[in-house]
Image (cartoon, rainbow, N blue to C red; front, top):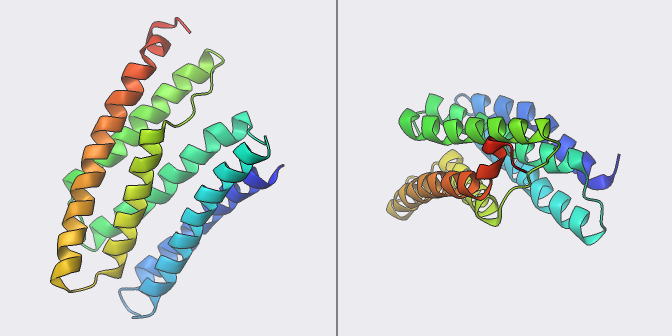
Length: 180
């Protein structure tokens, strides 16, 4: 297994550690900082696995499939935890998670046709904005600037979620017709 794929697997393995720290933050002040540290580390692996894979020609079908799936698992896990702490509306999380299920289903249909669909640039921007939003929401800094920033990031994440879904479906519509 190459380094980018190991980084992707590491990201998946960090998810339960992250969840434990987030849930501990209800009782221990330091746990939210540990959760943010683990979350940021997981986000960094997302950046580097793709960079290394492209730079050193280590792109694999496993990586094309697992990298976005690892992102979805990380982001969805974090969002569900944030709903528990009333930091984000359930309706927003449902829309974001629904998009991820739709894209995953779409990828499965493509895989049955022998195709592996990589994430688009817009989807990567969406993921980056979501990761920044999650970090800010976990930190939960009680200052007006951060409350405004949280709302801007939530709305930006929601808009990017919807637009990237539409872009993905339109760009790959031939998959649904079985024409690729």
